[in-house]
Length: 410
Image (cartoon, rainbow, N blue to C red; front, side, top):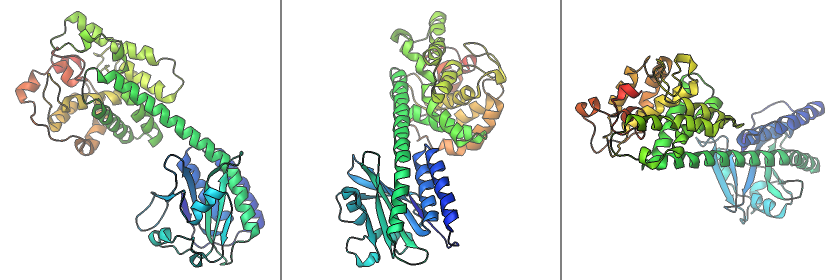
């Protein structure tokens, strides 16, 4: 992460002390790694009164150090990487754990000017210190450049930057751990979802990806925050997790389901609810609502509980629209893909019946973006095909081959 500073009045000793207190408070309360690095870079820029602060972190797997450019010739937030075994200043500090202070950067052969060239910044003086954890392990490097008074960095500056690095190290370690746990959780959710979907469709990953994207865009269009939309996006792949409890002779039956078999098929919502009930994770709590209620209808004619209107959790109402639209747009062995515009017309036509009118209105707004997700199919369903479509075509097409017509099951 890199921070640039515009010209500003020099800070007093009291102001620097206040910034130090603020620094400790802010870095200890932020768990998002990107946001944390941004806070650290901005605070160090202010406290040391420098033109630029760059934070490099080790990527052990790739044997590299990485940072993100905050500004410069359209490269906002572009990730930059340097080899850990390189001959540049950053690499040397990361390997040796020693501080390097350059009074004239361009005269030192170890200094690499590549970053300056892409950020419209000229480094005159530079100070780089190791970022170490409590056990002395180097996690990365803090680099600052160009004091506002144009003087070289001195021992006092080195001490302050090392102190800040020490304060920041534990916060960065915690944020990285939190990020790793979060990524692991999402990967586990995704693999569970693939397990549930894989048995009855070949393009599982595309289906889950499309539903996640559409659900995310719908949430934003409804005015939800990005955090709320992210939760819905990450929970949506688990909406059909209950299918793992269904026998193959039901789930994979190529012909028409009997009324008794259809009732068993419908039970996947209840099974999904049972699998996810009592979860402590916010993502899994939302997934529980989706899995249990994604076959409910706005008009109260859905299942398993026959909920109506606002009784249906909004998360389930969102994923229902996403799931039905994607089910219509993709090919199945028992049905042709609908044209996206035909599927769109169907969704709009079910407003106030199967779907929440407010969510359909949001869907209409984002449809131009959704349409881009789908490539042209080799062939499309004809009007006759759509009129005789099975219930599966419209309500998660993988679920009910050759059943009633679409409107009866939605």
